[in-house]
Length: 198
Image 1 (tube, rainbow, N blue to C red):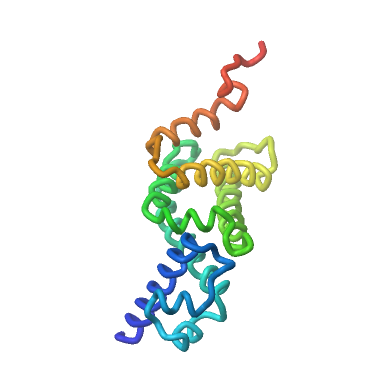
Image 2 (cartoon, rainbow, N blue to C red):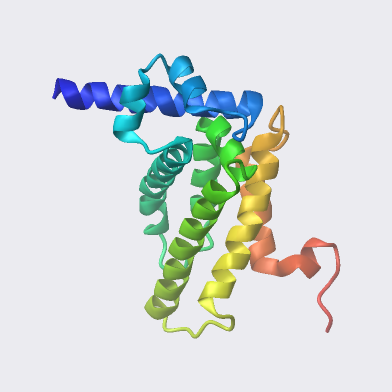
């Protein structure tokens, strides 16, 4: 039990050090020694858990995704049809709490691998949910669920990155969600101020 607690504490310290240092210097400039010094953890402890700094970044990203999935599960299951805005709101709340980590992932630090990991996981989960909704509601999607998921996730990621990079969040999460929901329900043409052609 003490070993597990110590392991978790070391991993948390290493993850926090990684995030702080990436924000200060960028991922490429970091060494394992920089990370272990900041975390106050021995290099041997680092290598007992991770192969290299890329492995640490991948683990931190996987943990971020697991935390996000845990938070999204109840709100996704809350609606048979979807389009409630609740999952996006929960993602924005999670991003607000884990802002620095979201910032380095969404910036593409680490040769873009954590960002790709994040996008792929979100797109996979979204496509599964789109397929399940179509089946539950006995509807045939007009656009392939994989493509639809990639478009939806791409828009969310772009908005999420813009939102977390602001020094002061100019729009509350609820307002961002309302606008994204309007966009999802009415489309880009309507959102640009035009009336649909008759």
